[in-house]
Image (cartoon, helix red, strand yellow):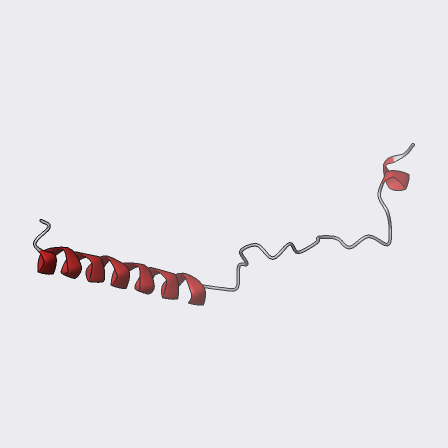
Length: 52
């Protein structure tokens, strides 16, 4: 069996499985902003409840 016959010529080069995508920096920036917002909200909640 040769290397050429082992690969199917009609198969797609890469199958997308719905995982993370590299679509630029937009989602990364949004994720960082939402993450830091969550940190601030949790810190405010902890101080308001007197848990620290």
